[in-house]
Length: 217
Image 1 (tube, rainbow, N blue to C red):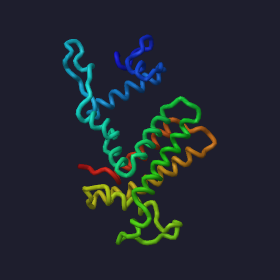
Image 2: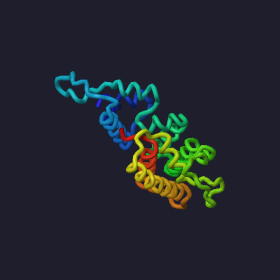
Image 3: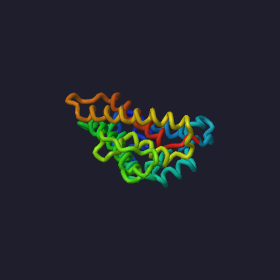
Image 4: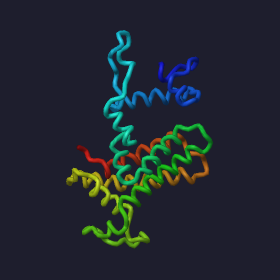
């Protein structure tokens, strides 16, 4: 309560950010706090006799995340490709929860941009064309398809490649393409996108990117 506050009593977070939370903002802050806890970035101090689990402190993992500006394994992989990709990801999720006009369209655009930039920067044409399995595809102007780029990314950034992972990667390729098309539809549609649709699309895009970037171990 001291951190997130109440409707009638602002918390430390509002004072630090110099803003007033709406009910939706406060609910989002609670969810963020629980996510930080479940991800091991903060932990209970267990010092308070009355409510030992409510008082928390940053963990060593949390300090390292702050230092690297990478909150999870996907952030770390994106940062290795280009730190700006982490900013795109942050901006997309910020737009999803924003109450500003047209924020959801911005979120859809940022989600699509995240996918496009990962494909472009992590799998340049020249490197993909050097692979023994590469075969020019007439459906692409460069001769390199997005599916081929994803295959190259998985082989480059995952350390636990196996037959099962290769099969999952093939499905992930198809999934990323489908999510990309979904985000394009949300960004260019005449009707405003539903928040749940944008959230699902962003979550799905991240699942697909994890499959080709993040090792299981």
